[in-house]
View (tube, rainbow over the protein chains, first blue to last red):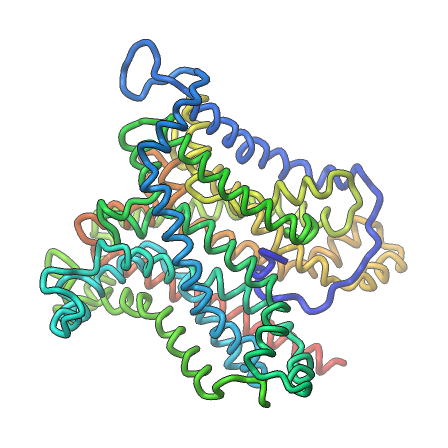
Length: 306
Length: 266
C-alpha cells in the first residue's frame, strides 16, 4: 500500500483469485524485468561501493583511480562533509514535518469532508497532482523569482522590519526548506488522501457518542487508523528531500551556505572528477535510507511494499 | 457532526494550500508571455512572441525533442517489462516472492542521486560512452517499479469471472489473455505509461549524471538557471502542462462516459 497511492486512485474491489502454479510462465514474465534491475540497479550499487573504496592511481592524473580497499575514504568524507550531511538531514526533517502539517488538513478535506461533493473532490485531487505536470526546475525557479531581492515580498518584509535592509531570502536555510517543502507536498498529500479516503466515519461517531472530545477522537481514532498513510507519506518525502540538490543549489534557492549531500556528490562526481568521495557519500546516504526502509518493512511486511 | 473541528476553517485552509501549490505554475505561465529584454525577471508587458519564436532560443527545441524521444522509448520498454511483472505478481505462485517485492520496492526508495551516481560509476567503469542510450537505460530502470505498482492495482481488481467465461466457451488460454485480460488491463497500462512518461520527462538528477553531452529539457533549464531562464523555457513548460491537463481531462471524460453507458446497460 505504501506506494500504491501513486497508482491513480485506489481500485475499489480486489478479487482473491487462486494463484496459478505454472513456474515456467511466472519465470518468463518475471525474468526480463528482474534481469534488467539486476544489471542496472543492483550492479550499479555494487559499482558505487567499489568506487567509494578506490585510491588515486600511480599516474597521479586527476580523475584516474584504481581499485584499493581504502576504508579511509569514508572517514575522509565524514570529516570533510559532516556539515553537509547534517544539513541534509535537518532540512529533510524540517521539510517533511512542514509538509505533513500542510498536507494532513488538506488531505482530510479532500478525503473526508469533500466526500459529499465528488466533483470538488476530483478537482482538488487534480490540483494536488497538477505541479507534476510542469517542470520541477521551472517551479523552483519561479519561487526564486518571487522571493528575489527586488521582489515586493522582500521589500515589504524589509519595510515592516521583519528583514533587515541588507537581509534577503534567497540563499537562506529558510528559503531552501521552503522550496523543499513545496516541491514534495504532493508526495505527502497523496498517501495521506488514500488513507483518509478509506476512513470509516462511523468510528468517529462512535468515539464522540462515548463522550470523547473532537481532539481526543482525532488522537485515539483518526490518527492511528491513518498511520500507514503518514508513514508512507513521510518516507516518500524524506527520501527524495535528503538526496535533493536542486533547491539548495546556488542557481536556485540556495547559496554556498546551504549545500547538501547531493550538491557535494554532483560537484565531486561531475565537475572535479573525485569519484571515490562522491561514491562514499552516496553509499552513506543510501545506508541511512536503507535503515529507514528496514524500519518500515519491519512494521508492514514485504507483501505490502508494492 | 460534532467530530469535525472548525467547519469553515478546513475548506479555507484547503483552498489556501491549493493556491500555494499553484502559484509557481501560474507564475511560469504568465512569464511565458513576458515581453522580455535580455532577462525574464521583471514584467515588461504582454506578448505572444515567445510562443511564436520558441525554437529560435538556442537549444530549447533540441533539448525538448531529446526529452520526448527518451520519454517515449523508456516508457515503452518500462511498460512492457513492468506489465509482465505485475501479472506474475498477482496471478502466479512462485518462490522468492518477498525478494522480488523488495527488489521492485528498493529503486523507488533509493534517492535519485544514488541511482544516478551508481549508474554513472558503472558506465564509467565499463567505459561506456554517455549519451541518449545511457539516459534511456537509466529511465527504464527507475520507471519500471512505478509501472508495476500501477498495473498491479488494475490486475487485482479484475473480475476473474470474465476470464472464466472465456475459457468456458472453449477459448484457449492465449486467446483468453489477448481477447479478455489484456483489453481489460488497458486502462491500467495506459495510466502506467503516462506516469512513466511524466517521470522520465521531468527527471533531472539521474539524467544529469548519465547524459554526458546530450541535452534534455530539464538539463537545459538547469544550465540556463545560472544566467536566468529564457522565456522560451516557460513556453515549453506551459505547453507541456496544457497538453498534460488536456490528456488527463480527456481520459476522465472518457471513463465517465463509459461508466454511464455500462450503468445504462445494467
